[in-house]
Length: 229
Figure (spheres, rainbow, N blue to C red):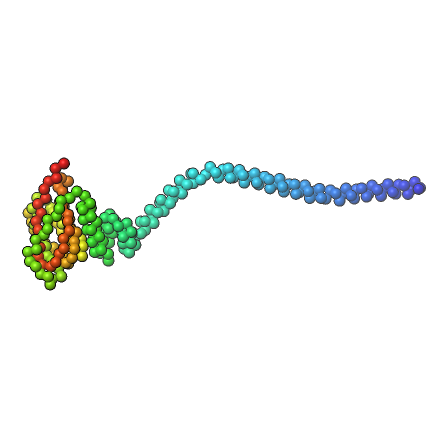
């Protein structure tokens, strides 16, 4: 082989090697890019783990905050339930307590359910007396019979020395307060009634009992004995 051909062959080999090197460097750059992406992903993953560690310390404080917000929201919702007459009545019925019916009647004294609220309130008050320590209510005297009358009239004499409140709950509902030494009168539809009588004195035992009203006129008197403790 001539010297000239030898030189040409050497340069060809050099150029060939340079070409292969250039071709190999391209995937290396891509590999480097991929490697960077992997490191970036690892970095992001590390950040996510770090976030999880931070978040794990939050739930208790968040829970307290959430409970407070929920309680405040619940309170606001309950208050809104009293904002209209119908929703207030629904709330009173759901609670079915003396306080709820009293609130409804105070907020809507001319509401369409005032009579129902008052009747239920009287019944709950009588139940309170019956569930407490009380004396036996004397049977009322039927001084005039009128079986054809749909109502009964009751004359009540207060000999207790205190303002006397008498409550009736049954077919009808009524509450009457009578001053000391005075008489009062109430007319009710015939039927079965729970009856309670009490005075505003802590050392006086209330009375409670049941009776059927059959029409006509009834009379009763109250002499409440002190309850010695």
